[in-house]
Image (cartoon, rainbow, N blue to C red; front, side):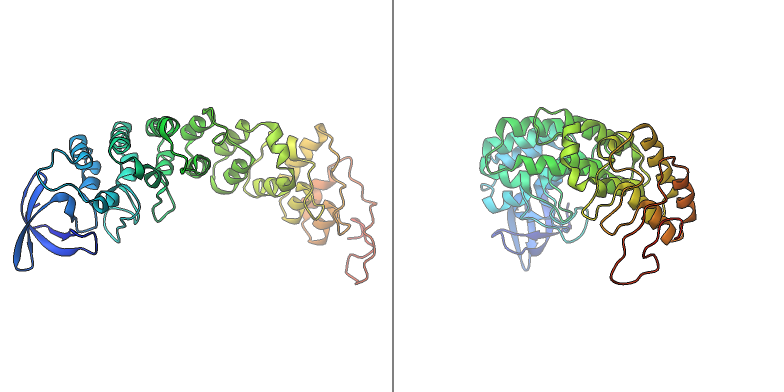
Length: 362
């Protein structure tokens, strides 16, 4: 706009502050010090660092996007490579204003429409295919790619365009595994069930929900529905492969208030490196409601490591509850018919208040 303060970047280095005197489509006259300079809009950035391409994407002007990338219709010198790169990939960073630092035109397009994303990708593939890798993998200050941003949108139309495009044209340098897995976690974190469904149904195994996603959902999503959705999409075999981390996963679920019977049925008898089951962790954490849930499940689903499991320190769930004075946990454990109160903790070389003790003694 006339009288707008801009930054003139003809050589690609730090911009020189200038004032717009006249602007006619893609040509403008600026006041640069004591001189008037005619230049192309591609040589000027806005006050917040936005390029002409970024502005065109923001207002969803597909015609302007086409001309800026194609370059042919512009009535000025060809767009310098450094200038176009700043609009498409992560070399451009904004320090303030509308855009998050590290935002690119591609990322903005992913927040707008599938038609705009499709147009931008098509033009880039045709005119600047060497930029595709950088464009796909560039991340803003929050570590998000354009793919990640699309995974936050409940409308999966943009995601569909990106997945289809990557399949057709993805260059070898783009790690589609990283893009897909990180995108799934973004969808989980933002409780985007539509994106989770969409990604999980793709025919590429690198995107489908796995045990790591279950753990991530329990830790980060804050939604029981999302946890249940992710758990339901993971095959039993994958959850069983996650067995070494099972107790951590289940304990985290318990602490966050998630009661998922399928998860418990597959991983309920697992022990961690200290020989502790989920029940023991619940007792140590003073979680009587979770103890009640686990015991109710064990009653109808006998497992190897049940209520009387002893950890490497010789302690059972009941002993931990008694030692710490967690009366409600003790009361819940006493309701279990299979509870053995005669188990004795082995003597230690160092005397402790519960040496040679059983649960009743404690």
